[in-house]
Amino acid sequence: MLFVDSDADTHDLYRTFLVPHRYIVDHAADGRSALATALASPPDIVVTETQVPGLDGISLCALLHEDPATRSVPVIVLTADARPQLHVEAYRAGASRVLVKPCLPQDLWRQLESLRAQPHDSAARPAVEQRIRHRSAHACQRSVTTTPSRLPPDLRCPQCNAGLAYERSEIRGATVQRSEQWDFYHCPTGCGEFQYRQRTRKVTHSAA
Image: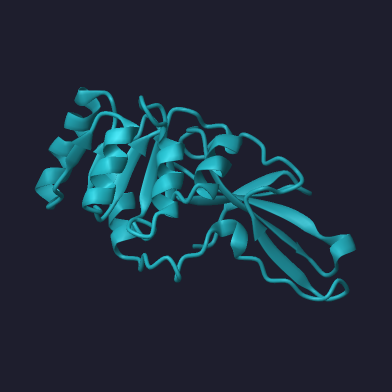
């Protein structure tokens, strides 16, 4: 895997935990060198901080997602910014996961293992906003988007109080006129997946 962070201590922290779990962790201190390294020899997974010099983490993710050589490489974005809009931008750039810092090494490891267990062919994992099923305007509809008309709120985990990371929204309803919005989040500390129903303003555990 390729770990992108300008802070050598942060890299060492994660590397010390991951190496005994049979991960080979290469390091890039800035976005441009990370892009050059990945294009020359595509890694199995990229983990990047958002605030790195030369080329920020989201721009790096977008460039990797656009290039045929690295399009299928999953990217985990680490950020200290819990705002839903930043997470939307990361997912639209092609990120597979967005984790809010502070992120414990074991939490990152769990996400890495989850990605390793999934197929990563680009044809098999279209962008979230492209996974939309259209039906007749008068029929039952369900669509998935990362740019809903109603802004997803900033939420905190009901179990550990960490800021929840926004993933996507689903628009559901019997008709277009009677549709409602559900926003989906995950807890960066590992408490699970959650959903927020805009109409009732309730947060509940989401089905896997």
